[in-house]
Length: 328
Image 1 (tube, helix red, strand yellow):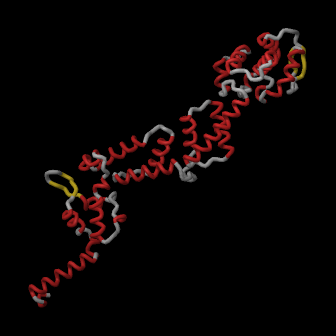
Image 2: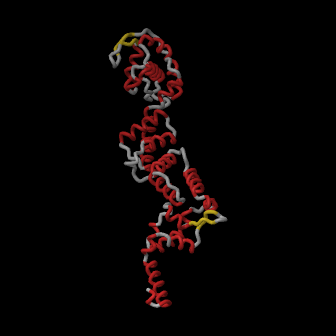
Image 3: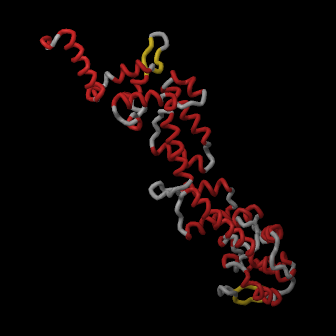
């Protein structure tokens, strides 16, 4: 029998004859103490049925008008597993609107066995989805979420939303949420777009709960890249990322400054400016190899490189040959 959770919908014992009539049990009511110590009035036939089946009812259903009517029905028709339709009909007979009953019950009049099976399945789903997300949950929390989801008849989207809302980024483990953060971060960096950690995490959560797609995030990042670098719009529209297009130039900068390519952060304007020039006709455009070389040599760090020192020595030797050492 379903646990309706309608403790506040108790029906007074002086209405018991109406309940008997609704349940189709004739006879004169007899006052006796029920399991809770309350004096209620029922026929001897009713009391025999009550004692036979009352132990099968969940605690919250005991001693309520609905419990009484259901007990009558079960005893009269020898039906220990009423259908949801039957439960709703009996609830209406004792003054509980069907709509209210359905909302309160959540379990839709399911039998105890059916509800337990649903709870087992939901518990499995909650545990697996939380693990996939990387959201650590205690066994008690998992059981609670499954119980609420079963009573409220959560959709898969609602259940996922609840789990995502429980994510604490300080304790989130490897899983979908962190993987999504890495993917979004990589995409943003490749398009030279700066996103805060909070924004990336928010996007990851929204993708997980279904309120945003990765395609949407991709479009947002590409739009920001086009706005920041309109001279690369055509390249971006072709499906290429700015970092891909500038990879060769980045390597040239790294070699000239005698640093690793990883140290050349294209999101740093001092490096980005080495890869671009201001053209009188075309406006901002990508620099050619020779233009990149000239731009790099304007950086004070280049003067400390081995190449710069060798060039200085070479120039000195050439001048010495032309003008003689006396010139120095």
